Image (cartoon, rainbow, N blue to C red; front, side, top):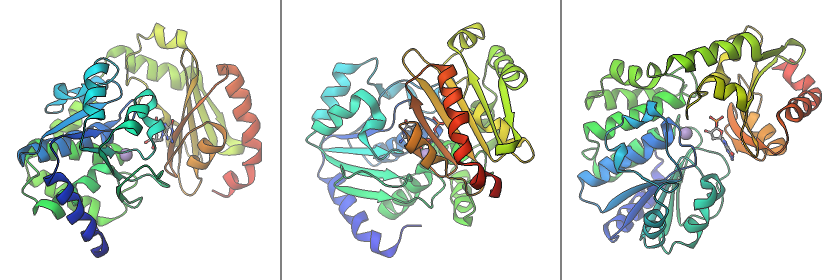
Length: 342
Ligand code: 5GP
Ligand code: MN
C-alpha cells in the first residue's frame, strides 16, 4: 500500500509521464518472473492509456517467461544493441524495475547512466543507489509487480490494468513468493492477487506455463543435482549444490533450467541456508536462499560481489568452481553460531 506521503510522488509520476514522448521500461540482466512481469505489466497498462512506451531488457529470458503477452515486443539489448541504445539514450523517461543499481544491467548500465531521460525507480530491494530522480522503493511488498499494481491503481484509478497487464503482474507476484509460500505475510499481497484474478488471470493456466514448461533433460538435471551434487552440512544447517559447465552441457542446459534448484535443499528438515553454484566461462554464478532471519544478502554482498533480499540473494565469484566450494566451506565457519541459532 502506498503511503499518504507518496501521493505527491504519484502526482509527479503522472506529470512526468504526461509530458514524455518516449518512455523506456527496463529491468535487470537475466530477468526473472518479477522482472519480466513488472516491465510487461506496466507496458500493457501504459500502452492502454496511450503512452509512448517500449520495454528493453539487457538480455533474453527463458521459455517459461516467454509466453507472456507481448514478450516478443521486448527489445533485447544483447541481440539488438543499436536500437536498444538509441531508445535508452533518447528516452524522456527510463523506468527501472526490479533492480536498484545500474550495475545489475551489466554492460547496458553505461547507457542508462548516459541517458538524458529522467530515471524513475520502482523496486523492492533494500538500499537503492542514488541514480534516480523519482523513487518508489518499498522492501515490504512481495514483489515489484505488487508495487506496480499499487502505483497503477493510485495513478489511474485502476482502469489501466488490462487482462494482459494483470497476467504479467500475477506472474511476478507468484514467482517472487514461491507461489504464495514466502515474502507474502501481508494480507495485501493476497488482496492484490485477488484483484488481478478478478481482471481475468487463469491461475491454473499461468501456473502450468511457468512451472510445467520444462524439458525432460531439465528434470533429469534436477534429479542429478539432488542425487549426486548436493552436499549437506548439518553442522551449519546448510546445503549446497554446484554444477560444472560439463554437467550443464551433458543435460542440454538451456537458459532458466537451473531456476528454482537453489530452493530445493530448504525442504530438508533443519536446513536454513542453501546455495547453488553454477560454473560459467569467466565466473561462478552464486544463488543464495535462507529461511528465517539469516541474511543471505549480507553474505552475497560481502563475499560474492552481489546483493539481494534477506532470504534470496545472488552474486558472482571470480575463481574456479572447486575454489569457490572451498572458500564457501571456509567462510561458513564464521557463521556457525548465527546459523545454529537460526
Ligand atoms: P538469483 O539467485 O535468483 O539469481 O537471485 C536472487 C535475488 O538476488 C534476485 O532477485 C536479486 O534480488 C538478487 N541478485 C541476484 N544476482 C545479483 C547480483 O549479481 N547483484 C545483486 N546486487 N543482487 C543480485
Ligand atoms: Mn523481484
